[in-house]
Length: 195
Ligand code: SAH
Ligand code: MG
View 1: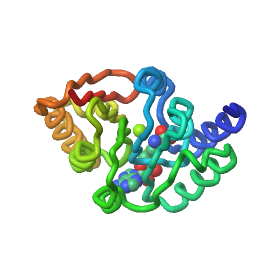
View 2 (view 1 turned 90 degrees about the vertical axis):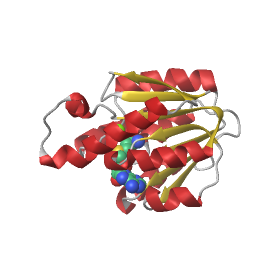
View 3 (view 1 turned 120 degrees about the horizontal axis):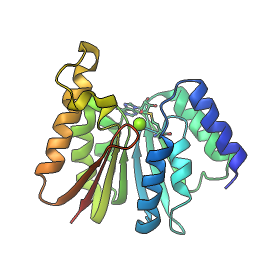
């Protein structure tokens, strides 16, 4: 892994206020990936490719990551970053709205990482479940959204996101095929194993 390049991608994201995976969250996800040794990962929300690049280290030989980004400029930058690290065989960027792209995908995936529009998490979950392997794991970032999800009062601006995240967490908990853990790490992560 070329650390200076990855460091530069991270720095640029921080400078441009692109919300990349937090270090604490990455540590937890890395441990899961280390154990799971995934062959196929699906990521919803690429931004400039930072998390996909970090996750690629844990892929099995011949493993791949499919990642979706609707912001064309960010997606193009992700593709450039991935190419510069010679990871284009492993990481495939799909440009477009995940709401449209997901239904066209077939999977299956060992890991699905949800990290895009919070209000859409329930829809992403449906698609993730459709494509998840037995023993697969769904990991969702930002599920506690700075504490708003567990608080009574939320500003108008956050309401759609909070409503979506609450519905998402409820769906996880009610699903008997999933064993879910919600961790108050970073911005909150939900880890759901298909059992
Ligand atoms: N996973 C990245 C960060 C993703 S930030 C990392 O840790 O490095 C969230 C990204 O999701 C943003 O770039 C945003 O443009 C994208 N996004 C939000 N809603 C989306 C949707 N419906 N379809 C595709 N991408 C979406
Ligand atoms: Mg995030």
